[in-house]
Length: 167
Length: 167
DNA sequence: CAATCTCAGTTGACCCGTCAAGTCAATCCA
DNA sequence: TGGATTGACTTGACGGGTCAACTGAGATTG
Image 1 (cartoon, helix red, strand yellow):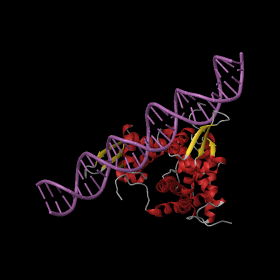
Image 2: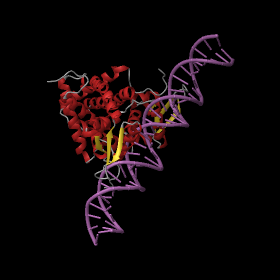
Image 3: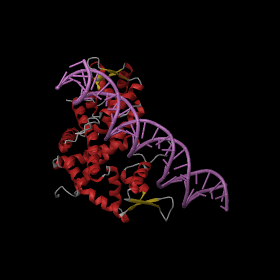
Image 4: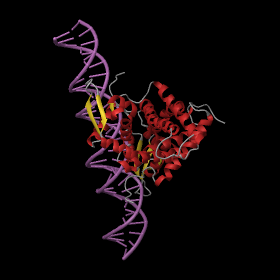
């Protein structure tokens, strides 16, 4: 009941893609909206604080943090600058090797994550997990992983490592 | 094997969410990258041209187009201005009612969509559809719809209709 | 022990999106 | 008929992201 997957979508595939595309478009803003409203934090900034909160001493090298946040170094640099201005993060050169920069959560920053987390978790549950049956959640995990793998294998494309890299 | 879904993720839910979050972060840039490389078009701009190409006379009111593109009117206005500068779209006030603006595909614009479509379709197939089994694709459609519904019902939140709208 | 290289991180220029304030045509009353 | 209103865009100011320099610390090498 369906055609070779190439230069045109079959009706079924088209609907699948349209549905996923809509989620891709709506979910991130919806998540951002909740965090912004309740904690004045973008999802990306929340992710930074959350990663730091889980790290020993609440401290991580910028480049490692960029890995956790799936972010280019330059994006991270600007985001951490914002968080620093709000006193939730501090930066200092690594005493052991001055090439690295260590980002650390302040205690105000730790308080912020703790305050922001429950609402965010509830939102993810409400918008993503609760609408699904258990088997669907399990499928979603597997589906997502397959798509991730496809993207990673596609052409060596992966989230920017930063800026440089002239090949 | 799992807990009440509230202030903390169970391991399983955490993995599901982490996997989906990664797709949310990687897939749109991957799609954009292909279109940008092969057609110098963002996914959003492509969507505009595509919607116009499907419309009678290749013409649509800006506000209707905004609906198709899931976009605020102001975002659309800027994007169409870019497409107009590249001669793929023309704008003119609706002769029948000067409050409306009609956006029309030029013939160069129609050629552009036709040239860009096959590569884009192939990319969506490669990154999303082909990695999945048929039942998974079907599940993904249902899962996406459930999430869409949850977002829409959440609090009346829906993609911005534009800017105005106090309240 | 300099000249060079490498690599982490920062920053300037620019692009795109949002929000809020215009603009302007049509319509609605008074 | 003319002054407010409504609704469809458009636009200025601004925030945040990317890319491509740039900076500066440590490793490498002659």
